[in-house]
Length: 239
Image (cartoon, rainbow, N blue to C red; front, side):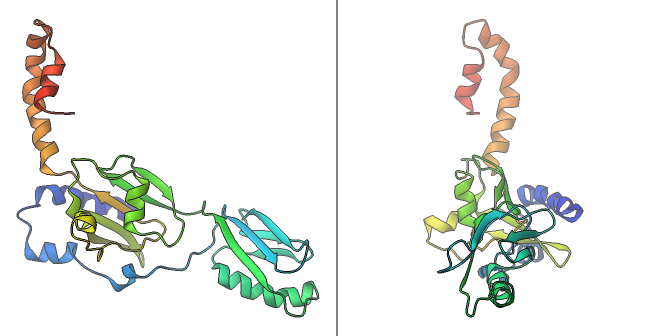
């Protein structure tokens, strides 16, 4: 997490260097990675809610949360370690294990994640609702923006940044949100992974607006004397 914190020092450069970034800087920001275009298999974690059942066998099922020890208990079989595995891996292991513990010849095991509570993705910056959202698997950048109820009018849509931990280091990728719908270009609508952080920076209008508001604020008291007050300041620059 320290690396992610360090990476956010670069956010100031995004706003300051929007028009004067070097080619080397642009090449780094606009980097593309093939792995961002593929959806990773969801890995089960502590707190996820799972359903495990043997199809066609009445009573051989359970729905519960994964315990802090990473296990679930299945009737007649005992504890099952599920954390760090995909649903397919758990299914394959149980189809083999149930032959011995439950005496089934060819069990057809069904494993599904009902709620994804062990992992999250984060969106910050110029969006209506910023914060952490559950990672549900098969999520793309546009899905996260939708959960955040879209961008604000102050968003610098084509300079969004995706931060991701890769092999112990924080990687930063450029995301062109504006192109998604204005041009139908979804080439940067990357698949997300647990722990990803999407940052939507501020455009120049908010900076200018704040400067104008700072300049106008001293006049608020004067406007008060004629019954106008801060509404006059807001007339010149919306909050």
